Amino acid sequence: MEAPPVTMMPVTGGTINMMEYLLQGSILDQSLESLLHRLRGLCDNIEPETFLDHEMVFLLKGQQASPFVLRIRRSMDKPGTPLHLRYLGQPEMGDKNRHALVRNCVDIATSENLTDFLVEMGFRMDHEFVAKGHVFRKGIMKIVVYKVYRILMPGNTDNIEPLSLSYLVELSIVAPAGQDMVSDDMRSFAEQLKPLVHLEKIDPKRLV
Image 1 (cartoon, one colour):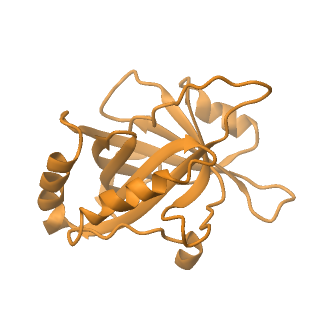
Image 2: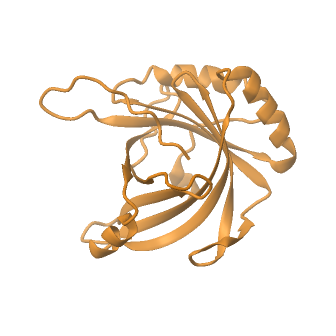
């Protein structure tokens, strides 16, 4: 999957704290084509991207209660593209006036030896999966529709099976901290996708 666009802004005395604003939902397989048709009509007039990615989740366990988590994603259908290292902070549900989940987000392109580098630092791979789907854009919003596949033999991305009979749908914006007004635009866009899919601010703690 392509990395979110990086917002270039003048910085004095530090770096920009980038946040990801996120709404999530799911649809059954039989509703996929209807949703893709709706998104083609609502999103920017460019051909949506497709992707086939392999994602590995690495943990570093230390003194803290929760392990430090990093994600590596590599493209399986676009040879030669950089690996992407992603850090996602603890989700902030925020107050009820904020319509999207918010979390810190760092996404950087890296060289091919990233996996070896993390292992040398003490990280261990926790799990891996394959994601296949479509990417649409509406201004600074990114809409991703994808299916998750289980890898049946560790490291063998040719031997996979669907994890479920549904597709995940994610609507996101990456913006500097404090730009909570973007969640209003996300809510307005999400309303236009009903009743095909209901995108919500999902609290990950409810899924544990």
